[in-house]
Image 1: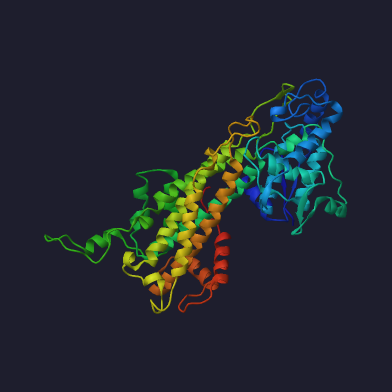
Image 2: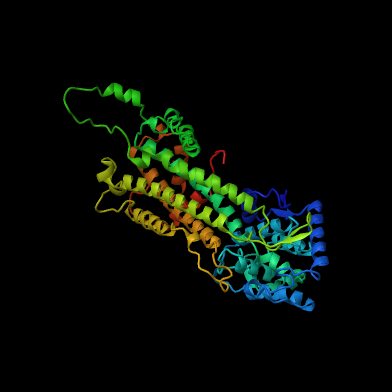
Length: 520
């Protein structure tokens, strides 16, 4: 049975946006009560625009706002706005980004403050449900007045122009609409502005980022637990008694999850038992055991805790954004007024994405450091060089994979620089300070993609370590499950072999792994 999600402008969730973007069987609908509010705002606009000067309805745009437009040119004004801004360049954005943006824009418009007609709502909903996905180039948005260029390419398709993807094929919109017997939409006053003036692209992609970040945190906790078992770590690094003394919410949540995952493990050491074995003596001496692990093992909760908390904060902000009115001007039916302001400014998304991006780079670095530990015999003093299970020197082991982890992590470190402080005045200095929110969001997704690659390398490294140790029955159920899953697609590496197709499958496994049951 197909699922349908209601869009009423109030309770769209990040999970809804992600689901619609990735599941073609999910449709959207707008409740009748919501459509009534849309119609009321539209009727109010139609009664007022020939009596009052309203920005973008009967005036020019930006620095040309002082030009009053003749009544017979109001529709042409909206069409020119769309065509004049649909000038993006670069590679097309992924279809999931675009469908998510269409959903968020529809949810914004049905709040009944934008003045659009019910017919426009129907056209946008039709495109979403038919999976007619406009071709939207990557480059062009400065994030103020929202995502003008990218959203203009969506609007261009609604009026039957530009290009779209349909059934995986890129084609001219006009030709497809004729084939599907769908009429191009005729814009009415303000509707071009209502379609493109807002943060719907950046907020939609940010929704996808937040779900992917949950998966990355979950993966990082799972690999962290697996790593702790592989070095026979002490249990006190994730002890409740330790973390309650520094009660950051994220830190406690990560430690609790580690404890849950490792509950069935027989690989870990108990500090009390260790202290019974090694007694104090009067003479200084060296013992054959490590008293505590290096930071990438011992401080998992303290490193991932802030990532968890930042994600929670950003997720709340994104959830607010996708249910907000973000165009300009907006209609206030209660006071019968038009409000001119800057709700299109994307700094909440931009700043949040930059913060989350940096924290996900730290997550990536944590994984890379553990990979180095297992690969580097001079650090671990136990495992063979590069997890080579045959003849080091003759065979390479996982040496090449470490290069992948190192280079990918380094790229993410460069991408971590905050994009939202790269404000460059534009639009005749009307937009004198901008958010760069869309680029901040897209760059965060690139960091996400890189993080999956590095964690995929760690998964293979951990599986190789478990094969070397030869005591997989002592691992926790969670780590055995990870091991078995990896070995189904990437068999133990003894002789050097062509591996890139298997590596792709490990990466795909990471990208679709189960998200842990945190209270997100």
